[in-house]
Length: 115
Length: 114
Image 1: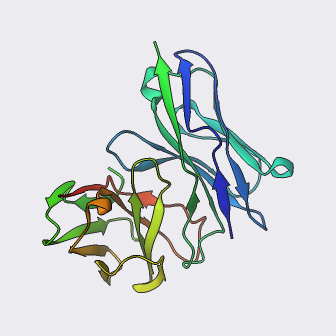
Image 2 (image 1 turned 135 degrees about the horizontal axis):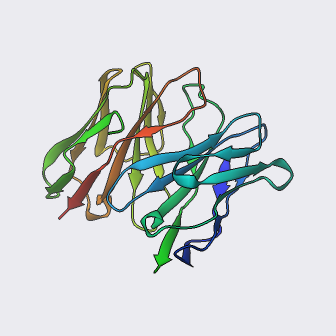
């Protein structure tokens, strides 16, 4: 069974500082990996995804993530955080859409941005 | 606008009430999902419908009853709920049998059970 671990429950960074959110996954084959962002009271919005090819993927809002198979990791990064990035971030793993298995989500990392 | 619309956005109900949550997707997808999001808990997958067939039911109590009349609509019927059922209920859709499994989420229905 697939699983996702986000070790950091809560992270605080200063505006303009760099950011890295950690994600480790467990899956027997090549996974499909996703990062979603959720603002308070809202649904989840896709930031970026990886399923093949270049292991460094670019997403929306200036985010990027790197797939490292040897470390079973898919960490999310941003070089300079903006106050509007304050939200909750979820990493998810999937097996490709067979129509019978949904994504498995991590427990999320809440990002707070200090002025 | 994500292409997935959930109504109502907020719902307050007593434990003896019967209500329904509605989800509609305009993306041409053929799989739909209900997730439950409680405070300080991971997203919990409740139900999956693929090609209008229920393919997953994660030990959800019978007081939650899903219905998927067609590939664009998904309902969650609620009856005799408990206060611990208060949560954000998220609907999502995807294209089954091809693609990466990416989910497209609605904005959620915030349920409060008194």
